[in-house]
Length: 187
Image (cartoon, rainbow, N blue to C red; front, side, top):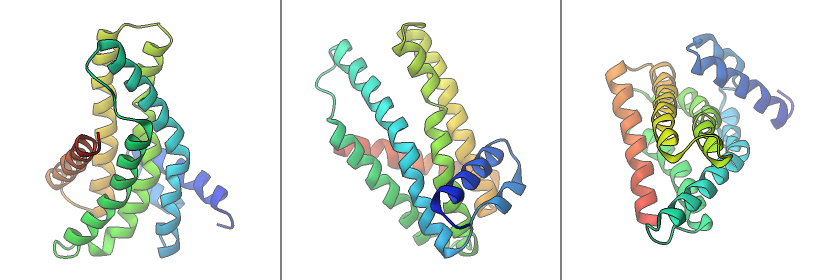
């Protein structure tokens, strides 16, 4: 793959196929060491989506009077910390648990699929933001979106690391706890 843009296009297409359960998607991804480092560029298409979710979340917190929402800068800092910490944790526990050979494959898929993980969270927020649904409906649809995001993470863990469904579920829970914990500490 000659350019990062072409690689991103192929990898995002592959991540979409993978989210649908197509394990052949790994053949479209650059699973080399260079591809590993380049996969962190997935933050570029994910960041605007993430910033939108932050904006809507901050307006919801302000409207509910639940206190001062964290600044956008702090929330982005939380994302960046998570973006670096998760690979370090997986690298640290992966080798002793026998996942070392699949680390790059997993992280490439994990990073590129992050665009879709954030993307599936958007519809309820957008429907609420445009006034088409109320806060309660947004909450219910948000739970469905969260389930879809967790499902994508689970598929990536099962297929990327080639672990059991139980281990993949534990990893998804671990990543979710890292996200919530980082947000709580930063926010």
